[in-house]
Amino acid sequence: MSGAKLKLDSAFYFDDVQVWGLVCDLPAYRLCYFINNSLALELKRAQKDKTFVHKGTLMHYSLFEFDDEIAGLRWHLLANKNPWAGDDEVMPSQAYRISGLPLITSLKLMDYFLLIEGECSDRSIKNWQEVLKKMPQIRALEIIDPEKTKNLHHLLPY
Picture 1 (cartoon, rainbow, N blue to C red):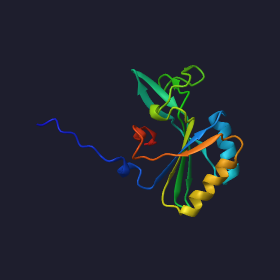
Picture 2: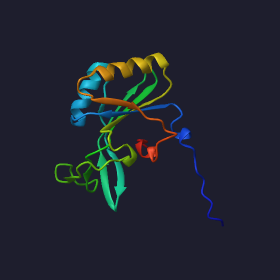
Picture 3: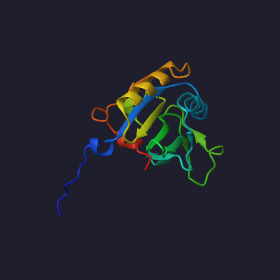
């Protein structure tokens, strides 16, 4: 058997997904509160955080989700920094935090990623971006291009 690998294009994963990087000093739960109020969403903490293994240690990154069944969209807010380390059985309060360790190292300036899954109009996208840019809690919003960013598949919540 040959050692050939099947490599999928990142466009396969991110076909109908908008990915925005957010710079914000607030903790994830506070940022969710302001995003929910500004965009009329109901982002809630996911039952399980996004996990990633770094140098043999299991890292947990905060993940918030909202399924908008009416619009057919699925929203995810994922922390890029400050994971907690430990096993799934350990409570986050008993684990230890790793300051600043980014999930996506090529985008280490981003504190959070907002992912929108599903088809939506360009007008809606522009409107949401404008609302987020006007929020005083968000210092910067950057549209992430999946074609130009390494390891963006780490953002996939599944």
